[in-house]
Length: 362
Image 1 (cartoon, rainbow, N blue to C red):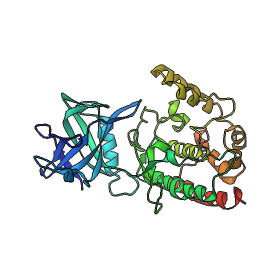
Image 2: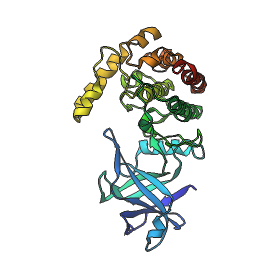
Image 3: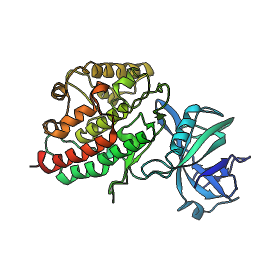
Image 4: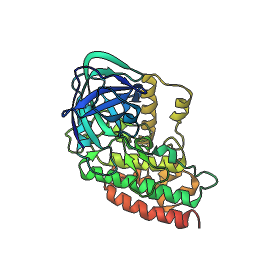
């Protein structure tokens, strides 16, 4: 159900355990409650996400009102009154209502309270927000394998292809069909159930950097290091290009099959080693990212054989047809990548079957 929300004149009571009413529906029948203690999306993304519930609009609440109530996530902007980026995300999610595999938006509005990452703080400035149904499942990072040395069991690899990689490719294809580019495809930005009953259990999340493919200019923000395409990170695009998502998908395949944090080639410094030891300053983070992507970009003239010799990919995968195809998906040169994610999904299913039936385990 899609709600039109109004902020109440007075902030609601603090509920058990620590819920606060932030808005009610226009018909005054439902209330939106969030739990104190939100989480910033990322160090580069100042939006705050709070867990919450849709409750009946009442003066007082009992535990039974909260237990079993529909779970939601509320995304707040740190910008008062109007936030063009948050509104863009809301409009993109609104275009995906009713389509499996994407967060389902159920309302939006402004709140009389400004929300910070660690607590709620009263403010005179209204904060825009939107509400989505809570997405079940685990981050794709939890599905990562390590194919160096002893191979995982065949069934484990089959399930990764069938329930994670193939559905992810299909979801991205659906976005592109609707002229949407995600721009931040990465393991942490999708969820799937650990014991899926069908291939529809995967959901792409975090549309904070998404854009319309028809936009006249590309957005300036850069996604997750290692998964953002080099042409995006090096600001070489004149318009949004779906092949940036192809790169993110290929990098996600690489990470989930290798267990590595991101793509590396021979001779490159590993930026994730630095990140494990300390939190970089803003300038240090920019320098790490620039050095990393300049190293990736310097390989753009190599052919597939040259790339596969230099990439830090498990040797068990390098000699397979899928390993060679993966190099097309993550080629540093955008012109060498496929652009049709439907074809990528079909090829992935074919080569994934060969990989798990013959090439790795024969």
